[in-house]
View 1 (cartoon, one colour):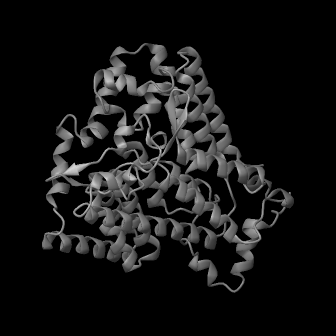
View 2: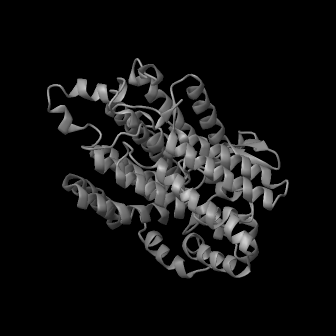
Length: 433
């Protein structure tokens, strides 16, 4: 049994893979490749090939409970496809099944290796923040639109996608561009990732320089989605850890100080509150319109459509018919396309993938919340959450309580890498190659 588990001679090998996954999720999301009658996001291609190579190399495992729920999800998606078959649905079906199959993979990891993965994510977020700040102030000297599009040096086919409006410049005030960090699809994503980075920093590292850089990146995005994440999860982090509360207060005071100096305009953030009552706005499209579409679907759909769904890739057509933009909420997509049964299985599948992780619980909650309501790309969750083992986090990343014991290193190595005793076969039965 012990020979079945993959082992790394060094955690650095696993860390390099995680860095490649995170860099693909963050720096390739603006670029696409033609795929049938649509375009395939380049970040998905890179992540898929990386994980496929690692799996074929014997370095990744498939977890039984994730696999079983995925098979049920694939069956629900296939049933919806066959009962509503149109050739245009094949692309959406294929992408849905292939993408979520990646979440069944996992790799035994040490606490030190996962700590380096988080540090890599923080470094990449800081890099995007620096690019975002430079992009914001550079627009007062050069053409901001040309800068955001890399002065049109890249082939047009790489930057086209069904959601090409994501890459269009976002303005506020007197024609001032919101920053995207150059490589992100829209300012909302820079705001969300910097907010996620701030949350991780206050929970695990609390480095003042990193917090300041990410706070600046958050501000130049001028987006309400990241603000919503901070308003919900930063107070929860303070309630859970006193030191995290002090670090969070430091970030808040820094932002308030910048607002007081007039460098940043706080009204751009406070004005977003009224979007929930304004049809056509981002907040309305993400939180109100999907509820309208769900109610409309209950009124107009057949019993089969309610239970099995209307077929892969049909959400946008329905959203555009009744209210454009309602498909921005990712929770509505599985409900409409795969029905009540499929959406229930989808929730169970996600629950099986996001349990017993090394990732801090509040970070997992923030990622799931962002995915369901804010369109946070779930690709980043593969490296941060589902790929890094399934051992429970008892004392944080560095497991301080364990390291106090003189035999802790040997005990932790036995838990992760050594074959289990014959008296505990149940722990091993959750893993297969």
